[in-house]
Image (cartoon, rainbow, N blue to C red; front, side):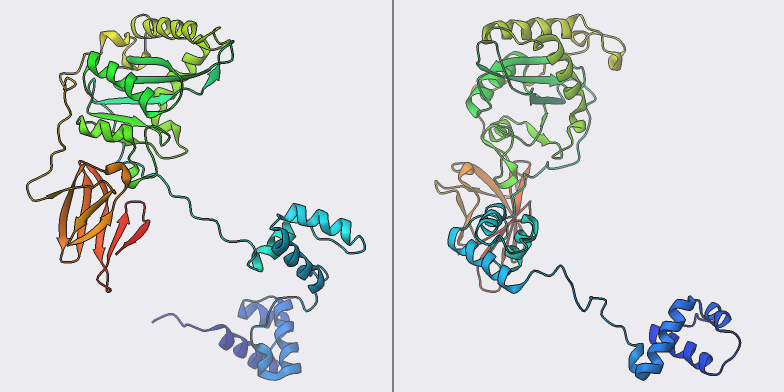
Length: 393
């Protein structure tokens, strides 16, 4: 037979009907109905005082709260905020000075009053970088995956900043580059990668974190550097923000690099680079690695068969995908309407695939940028991969 379903009000009425018939002791009656004696007495007293209406659920809010901020104080807090646009700490200090006789609330309570009164606007939602186009995969051979990162910047003894940019082959642990650069800009990073690509060839994938210059907040998380990688035929990968363990081999190499070369730092950038070069020779040719059978990385690594081209080739798309140019304003034409993709993609070819009569998918090479959907008002709604929407006329 099916289980008997009883709502709370029916359960209270069943208990009170048995209670009014005086069947057995009160404690035994509560035990049979699965409630405590305290709850049983509460229902019984409410029924005697208010009848059946007393069995309804009542608000648990206290009738009087001694901690409630008086209206006069809340009004003064809002007035000071509108007059000076100050924060809660400054407003509290002014209240203490101007009204020493008042019981001034804490700055957190003042903030809550301002927030509830609409004096503090909601923060703009931070646009996150798209992590990667697929799940991260390990490498089974050299040049299938390279990893790249900046070891935390530090000052040399002469006061100049040093930003070590390191590139490593994921499979063999071969340290392809360890360069001291002046910053994390696009130009500095590209110069380093051009030298590495010309000497070792082109990998299939490059894994990085979500910082500059490897990623940005543009569509697809693209940056100028990752855009250049894609035109060379390289697929960029990005780890999940806040999870450096997804690039654990590289992070472990960084710890050894810092211990051997930056404690203490060299006198200047030239001497620091000499330390990096010496470390790289030892790391690749002398230091055995347990993960590769106690071999040295240079015994496992081989140069890539794909050489860096002299001129960049246009990104290729399947035959069923429509290819469109992004104009100088960062817009592309879809269904006779202009859709803004981003200034970074100006002059590039993007692929537009029609999924239905009112839905299109936009990509740049292997990187999905988002989808474009026609709304009821005959406008195009561009939805990024990060779920941020932009209405296009």
